[in-house]
Image 1 (spheres, rainbow over the protein chains, first blue to last red):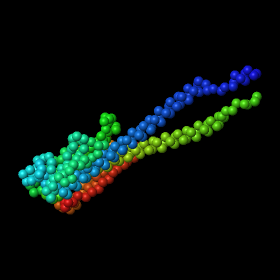
Image 2: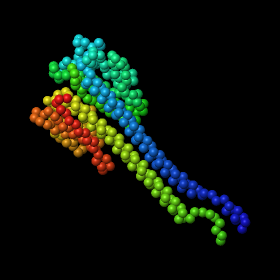
Image 3: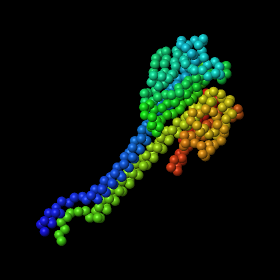
Image 4: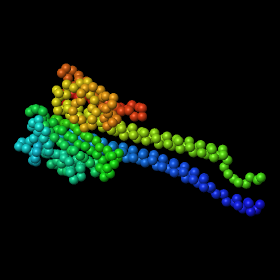
Length: 186
Length: 145
């Protein structure tokens, strides 16, 4: 009697119990991590999309308003004068320098070193308009004129995408921007 | 026989397991809903961008040549990002989508003859899990600006 009692002293889990527990955990944990991973990925995507949208909207607005309101004529070189004036015909030409009514010049261009849109002017100097979180491709800024006495039309185009070294498609966001601006005072 | 082994009864275990499973089901439901909302959010951001893209393009067309611009009237479907040209008039067909999801339409209503003002109504719509979403964008172009 006493011997039998001492044999039953330690209660342990059986092999079957352990196997069942481990199997359940191994089913639940991957499912849990999949969901968490999916949420994180989606949040990263949205965050990147909103960053590039914010910067793209901002830089397009800035270029549009500055060119429309301040630019008087378009030139191919500095200092701007009548001999280097461009955009007199229907042919599209690259718009390099804009002149305002005080004879100051400014320009928007793609800084090829860091893939940012930058602005330069005779007063303020050089300013990057986009951050290092984004990169710009296919930047063109061209001008033409529909008829001899109509104002020059500036055609702006660029693609903004998130600046990442990973080439995973699902995590890369990119947006196209294009617009045309007519100079208000010319 | 003296019962000296202390253990959970079947009822106790059942209650515990059912409460736990209720909790897990609720947590999974909340997670799935939030994931779905995130997805909708992403699509909304893109749809807003597409609507603005079309508006900017149309503004460009207007700036370039007002007389030519007034000849376009009615509904047009712009089913490609990075717009290059005017499509043939008409609504979006049921099987072609912008970015495999969206339908982007604009309706132009000129006022006056010859037109001095054009009312635009841009609509980007898409369907998601049996529900329709749309981003409307209305604007007015006039000859004087």
